[in-house]
Length: 204
Length: 57
Image (cartoon, rainbow over all chains, first blue to last red; front, side):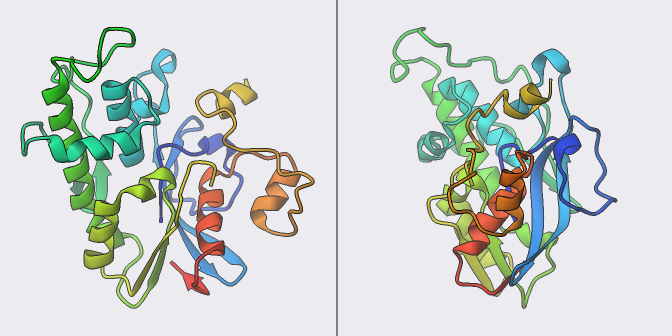
């Protein structure tokens, strides 16, 4: 199971995958599910993120995906899409239920609601001390929400692969560093074994 | 246009693996052929290859 910030464009994906997982050419990989047996690799499913805000705002972190949401929140709080680890570290400082849900799982399909004007306190580079920002409480609460939504959804991660009595091999790039979510997968997804790639990083 | 689509937000995510001793795999074959469009497949392979599992789902 690959849960990534962003992967290849659909137009560039040369590997075979189920034809039912259709998308437009500029959609990006969000989740992929594979089956391994020795040297054989089979793609079971791909979930694509469609461009969300048009060509002039087509950065992947505006797209509706779990990993992309982490990068969107990282950009909002730290001004850097690749600060997802810092976002996870900030989450314990947040208060419960101060921010609306940012991820929803309905009938096994992940939905990422649009980013709204509730989030109008982005960190702006060179705007003063990050630590002393009056937006810090808001940022902490947002980080809590992203982490809480993620771990709640991760516990139901087996939906695609039909556990139990199966094994899972997870490498969701730096998202694999989310120890809380990994724990939920190990305890609640129903898989026989769970392997999390150590030192996961986007270079795969 | 093609380079922009692939690299605009993650330059350097796919280093050139030519000549680094890659043998045979879907991933290394892709690198040898100059492809850089297998991001999730690369993630999947890099996790499974170092895992203790002979089969995985």
